[in-house]
Length: 391
Image (cartoon, rainbow, N blue to C red; front, side, top):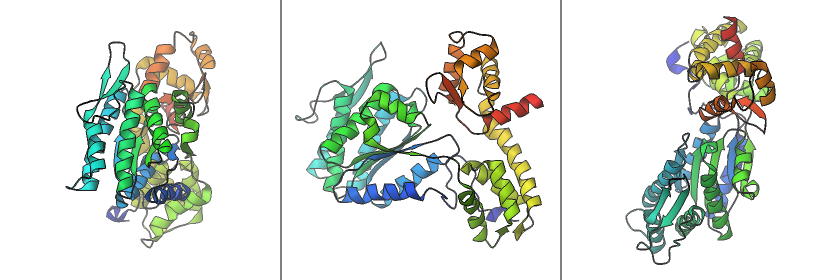
């Protein structure tokens, strides 16, 4: 069939034609928007899950809805080791968002918010400790504690009040939130907490790996009550079928049930893999009926593309020693690996393997779902590694 009319959208953060199975999360965020417009605060939303489950896509959908409501919005992605840049970038982006939302005639409250942002700065001392400050010359009422949590929270309240005055709210959308360091996470949580206490709609919507809730709770014990945590996983059989069949049906193409079944099984219900296999199958099928034979060919092509890009790019980021560690993890067939068991497999001590483990976590290839356990950040990585060994 014509690839130009291919309805599937495999890619990083690309919105598929149908956000199958994510309506509860969209409805929850729509409620946040409606409440904010009424001057009521709500819990922020935290989307968690492995890579490929659609966190970034859903985050973008929520941001688009807030933009459509003329909220003060900011979107950013935290890069490994980029906590300082993330908070500084957030402050700068909030300034731009306020001006965009308010237009040329700024109210006094909006000017105060801009003053707080302009005067906000982050410094890092030689010991790596972050601190924040608000310039006294900007606003005589500004808090000037030098404490990052206090000063960032004060800034957030000022931004929220500017949004409240305009009959909307302020929303910050942060992808890869697990990459924030502990002080930055604590500052973000403190900002949301203070805004809630002052009854101003400053909302944070984040996306991160499954260990994000634990990291937030370590940063601030009350973070478990600040956010509505929404784990995203693989799609159920009927929902996965809908993700494949509905977009094709809109173009007059029908998937046979057996074709759907083998594709869903190969993708294990993961949204990104469904898009990849769906796109490949569309391109090889004659149509207007997609058969099991078409699906089998599409799966082969889709898997080759995943192996050559999605998985291979991650594999080559690891050093030789790190690849050896990943091979040991692959023996657990995608299940969590215990660090003590991995050390025994490799004939090394856990402390000796510490730098390798830290390097893999820093590269975003694995994460620690709980103490003493490790897991791959992407589904299917263990099977990919085994395929490399078999070859």
